[in-house]
Length: 130
Image (cartoon, one colour):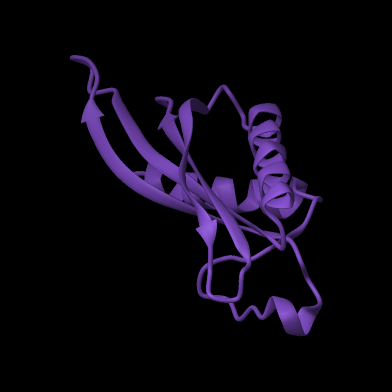
């Protein structure tokens, strides 16, 4: 049996790695110190598998998950601009024959203890039957 959740995670990671050019990318589990690297903006994408269901009598399955992208910047305006760029990037680059972005929302928006601003965008993604 093929793991559509695994394939989706790998697809989305590779999409950012191969095509995102606006900023550095920080993947969960990687060492990353933006101050030491002299970076003032970056994104942190991560995929969260949610559910699967049988769609029809033939056993076609539909899998759904969320792609969360945390946009980090020094200012609120820069973080929001980065969020706009991520939304445009995904709408332009995701393979619509394999994945459907059902909707997106700003899941969180604030700043951390060092006054770095963040915007968390959550994309609800449906994996189309293969």
